[in-house]
Length: 81
Image (cartoon, rainbow, N blue to C red; front, top):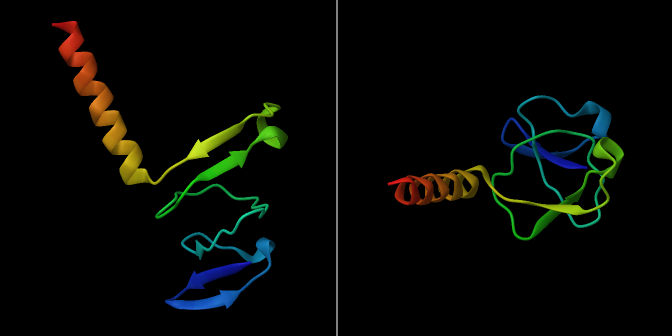
């Protein structure tokens, strides 16, 4: 697994990932970690081992999620009036 640690790319075993590492995720990878997506394109995750649900869940960056939340809150406030 490739990660960026202290500004340099390095190859590490998934057991050696530390808090603060940036991990480059590629199609088909299994990553046993929780994290925040910084930049992505079409990411979907199968969380069946954790939740039992077999549907893939779409993932997006934190900024995109915050923007969608603001839009939904504004929509809700508009319909509430």
